[in-house]
Length: 367
Image 1 (cartoon, rainbow, N blue to C red):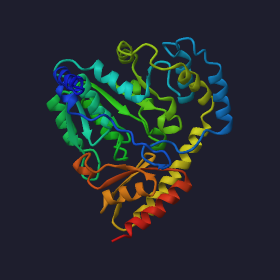
Image 2 (cartoon, rainbow, N blue to C red):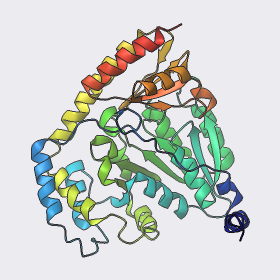
Image 3 (cartoon, rainbow, N blue to C red):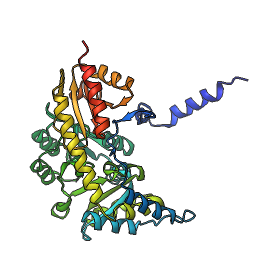
Image 4 (cartoon, rainbow, N blue to C red):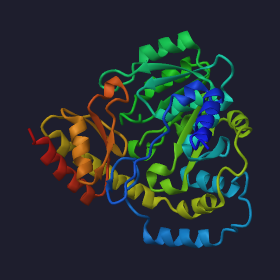
């Protein structure tokens, strides 16, 4: 019996049935980080305060695991509205992280021939969701300093008439915050929906959330992943109710699990701890930026996030050298021409940042 026959037969039917553009892709890779200082995924490095952890444990212990979660997640929505000052007049949709909501938004607007417009480089899941849903992508390169090329964006809007525009505010992976006036200009010029993705709002201290009712085509997208709650995977979208009603039609039933729903009320019963941790991260961010800027062969870029992007004269060597020292960061080289030799480093705890700086000093000093 030919033991390779089933594998060959499977490969043949996969090649025949799976979309060619999907077969050409690689799956989104998440690096293993056991035993390493993990500075690659823009997580909050701080643990929950003891009182918050105790409140969370009590809430999770009462979850009726034998039952389906509330399909509408009403209690979780109420907790979010109260904690984050989301007006009742605005629609609110929850997702399994913001990734699911990006996919839902793209699916909702994926009419035949529709176009998604994005500045590049930006969050990789925008382009991925377009591919998954059949939206055509029009990309507009950022300027060399990672600022938004507003005129090129406006020209593309006039040319493409996009059904959907994604703007990361601040931008990932570059870290910078586009000018509010530029976002406003895009909102006014775009005939379709403009998603302002505020994953890093807590570190930027800038937001369009209060302006949702001002623009008919504005949706603000956020996640709790960057503010100490990555493990519960909760994203939320705020927009005029007409938009949310349509998006909700494609939302899978029970997409937010019972533990996450219970966790929201416990975690957001007070938000002082979130603000305190965000302030600590911003302070460490400033310290890291200043120290890295003094290293030879390093160009540090402005950031309003919980990570720093820097261009190293020996970017790949630095990445591998840090990895050998058990420090995991993100190598952006090869993602986009503007990111050549760039590394993205999440702000860690003070002790983690001290170890990072010590390692960088040693590695950048090597001939």
